Image (cartoon, rainbow, N blue to C red; front, side, top):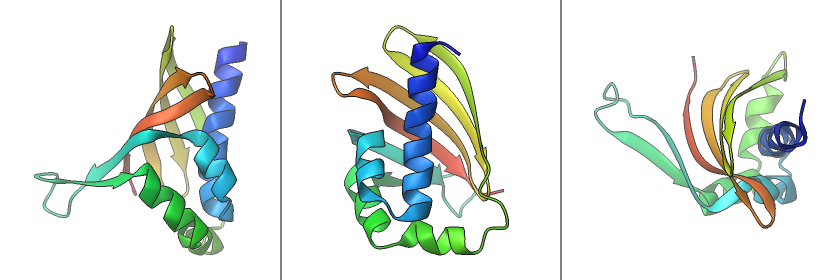
Amino acid sequence: MDNDTALIVATVHDYFTGWFDGDVSRMERALHRDLVKRSPGQDQASTLSFVTAEQMITWTGEGEGVQVASGLADRKIEVDVLDVKHDIASVLVRSEPYHEYLHLVRTRDGWKIANALWCTP
């Protein structure tokens, strides 16, 4: 695993583990301030719901992810780095209960998650 790939995987783990543990500092470290996290709406994706970095950080601090994690039998997080080109990367993450496609960007502060598209199976 090259250095960029290792750093990208570490960022993804900050994001997921930060969520599941209610660790705001890990979540803040992982997210780009302009994050847009989207998921299909209830109307079969005619609309997309979206969340901002500020909302994710707030919900992390409020323990939303801790509640999710408390009901999980397994917290395994599979991270597949699909592509890295210069300062951008694409990642697929499989976990219980999430399936997410992430786009990351290299910043002066390291790799940050800029976009997320997710669903629960």
